[in-house]
Amino acid sequence: MKILYLECNMGAAGDMLMSALYELLPDKAAFVSTMNSLGLPGVTLTPLSAKTCGIAGTRMEVTVGGEEEESHDVPMAAAEGHIHVHPHEHHERSYEHHCHPENPHCPGHDHCHEHHHEHEHGHHHHHHASPGHIASLIGGLPLPGEIKIHAQAVYDAIAAAEAKAHGCPVEEVHFHEVGALDAVADVVGVCYAMYLLAPDKIVASPVHVGSGFVRCAHGVVPVPAPATAFLLEGVPSYGGEVKGELCTPTGAALVAHFAREFGPMPVMTTRGVGYGVGKKEFERANCVRAFWGETADAANGEIAELVCNVDDMTPEALSYACTRLLEEGALDVYATPGVMKKGRPGHVITVLCDPAREDQLARAVLRETATNGLRARRWNKYFLTPGRETVETPFGPIRIKTAQGWDIAHRKPEYDDVAAAAHRAGVPFAQVWEAALIAAKKEESSHE
Image 1 (tube, helix red, strand yellow):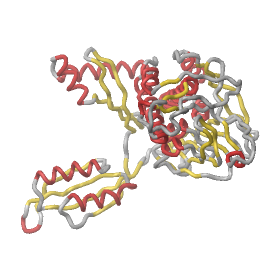
Image 2: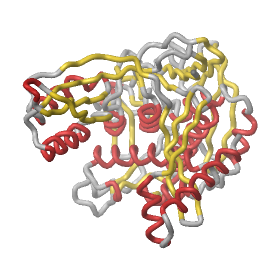
Image 3: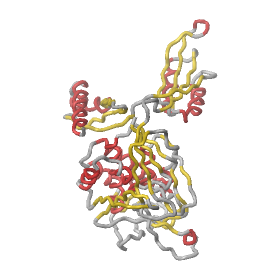
Image 4: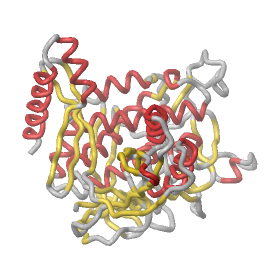
């Protein structure tokens, strides 16, 4: 099984993640060539050789119109108003976010559409991009649908976090145009590299967020920045003695989206290590490390199984309970008919869930069913990594559910899309289904 381990001991930033993955690619030149031919306005990627604490790696320079975005850490005393603030370079370009100036719920809405960030060359940019504009930009890229779906999901998460942090609707969040293009390049680059590597499993270390303060469009904010903190909900993270913003919103969104497990590096046979080097210098190596390797074809996961017997619930009540358990986060719920004590007909209810949700689901079973107790056990789990892509058919776009791993690939059209397309076109369901499978096969062949 192919496994990718992301070591985020010095945080996570979009350009650093892309640089680390770039070092693992077999055809690095083709990756850069493709990224530079996507048509992102004014965007150019240039891989630069870099070192941190004597360790050689890559820093992916992303320029927009010949400029790099910069973000600025703020010394503690300056944040407290004791000394003048001197901007410092940071290891990832940041993008500014703004709520709409007419939104009365936006903190500081009288000035939140202004641009206070100081760029490396002292230039100020006043154009902004909305989430809708970015979605249109990503959707029009000449890349496989799977890459664009991942990129859009990452950017949706960023926009939602920014909106939550600033108390405004998502549609009123505006990204600074140069920073937005910079971040789109980072996000798409990471998604494209992940697509090319196609790991069966992605694990990440807990994320070091740094400490202190960072300057943004609205002023000086604590590290992690509010949007970053929201994006890291559910992700193990920690602060430390290092002063500065080590984890950016882009990096947080990418790690949260792709990593399925967090913890120490798993037992693996390493085939390559990528070093994504940051611009800023610390006393310790400032890099993201990506370990690429293999594990034995053993179980690649664990699952919890909760089981109980009921003989005093109506079919309607049982159906409702199963629906509620799925809404609570169960991976699957099913009822098997059985004969209970004294010959009473009943059902064995089985709930499958992530081990981390075992306690939550056990309580839900007791609440939603008539049982007074249940059994819980853990099982090793073998599974193919799920995914999703979109293909074009004569009947319109159809989403395809994918599952891959161990040199096995399954593809299945999304029922709702097929049914809707068949209804619109007035053709049999099977005709659209077959067209979607043919399109999916062509898409797969074009990238082999």
